[in-house]
Length: 303
Image 1 (cartoon, rainbow, N blue to C red):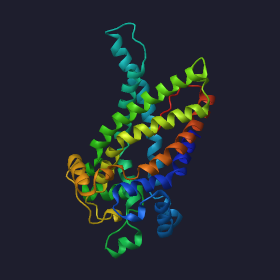
Image 2: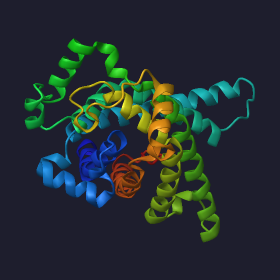
Image 3: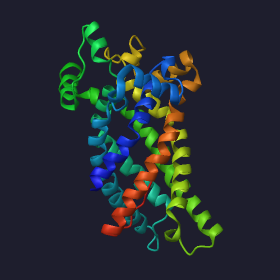
Image 4: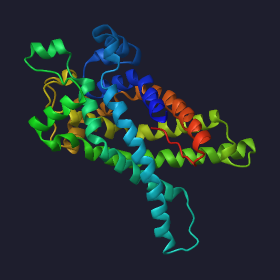
């Protein structure tokens, strides 16, 4: 059930997710703006076009979440045990949770990164008709994409853009947890509650939304760099056909700013903001139900 809910939550915001990725890697004005971008996708590709790459994202998110929560518990408690070798009275605090969260985010992202890379390419590849005109062929699905990339580009291609992804995870997770916990504490004081467990779902939703928005904004340029590196030099990337071939993260940042301006590092951010709230809303419902069934202590972070 949890797996199905997780997939539904991703599918519900899939059009916004695809639009965000298209805006990140495309220089076309057709995708400027949320409404105009979604309208263009609908007119040119139909309903199916709104959900391109969603299958790979749904496959990716289940193991990603499982690895993240599993590693978070072990890493946070591992850091606490390490602290207790120097201070026997050390307790679980925000910094320890931040370290555990950042480590868990890096491990989970790395473990499922090939699926994320495939999802990115499935999202932006040319239409079948355009691919046929140019003498190319589209990926027919996740397995086909995996085999073609492995044969033509080697296994290293599955980790294109990994470095900016790792760097971006650290401020995103750090700010996410720090702001979320701080806002909850302040809300508890303002409402005169006994503890954060007494907060309403709506209050937690607002705290999580603000934390997620701030974390996303700070880490967003690294996400743009990741997506551009994933499709760099790939001829089937219809939205970036004839675009630059980057040699690495620093080259991507340098050329993007020089050729398109600093604002290009934030292309797609508005669609991402809109995606955050429904994503967190659905996530809260999912984890709230899990708490009722399993009664574990679960920390929810925007993502």
